[in-house]
Amino acid sequence: NAGVTQTPKFRILKIGQSMTLQCAQDMNHNYMYWYRQDPGMGLKLIYYSVGAGITDKGEVPNGYNVSRSTTEDFPLRLELAAPSQTSVYVCASSYPRGGATGEQYFGPGTRLTVT
Amino acid sequence: LAKTTQPISMDSYEGQEVNITCSHNNIATNDYITWYQQFPSQGPRFIIQGYKTKVTNEVASLFIPADRKSSTLSLPRVSLSDTAVYYCLVGDLDSSYKLIFGSGTRLLVRP
Image (cartoon, rainbow over all chains, first blue to last red; front, side, top):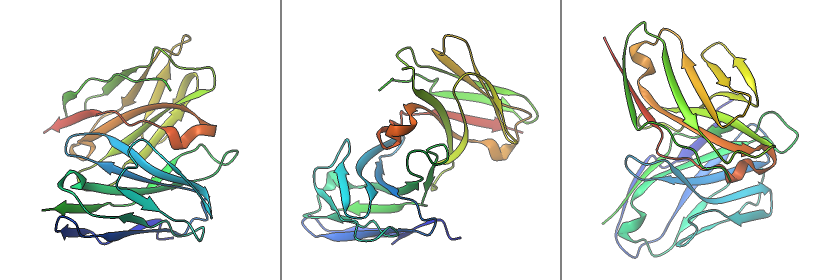
């Protein structure tokens, strides 16, 4: 299994541009998450999904959108990029309630710079 | 959700046992305690999880006192490769998506 994969690894955006960060998992996990991690800080939850077609906001959703059309994929869309969105974006997935331990499996992250 | 407090950083030497304590005074009855490890430029990795008393796996032990208001991650005989940030999280399994990552504890293992 590849686990959780993310593309691209790095990206530089100009202010006002848009882009989509890709996340995919091959573990048949129902739950998927998007976090952002600023330098020296912990992760903050942006959006999460408990299954295909179901998404909800996390702690810091403003400026982002998500969709979940399949169990495997959970793309994150940045509209009108701003310097405050410079961060590392990390995707994760986990089993649903009643599954294992709620342990989350994380991808390697996408480093985004907005200038 | 219970807030957690951990030391910002710790130093150790190779071969020593390292204990990182996390306090979570507002832990709820259904909450589990989970520890993650994160290396630079990587996503966090699950280390261990427990509810009460002691849990041990192949890489660490987790000690939880009876009142569950704190927990201690124990890493036996650390090596240089254990240099990382360690996060303590508290939450119930039904709300795993609501887990809050604090700033974590930066562990530096010296030769």
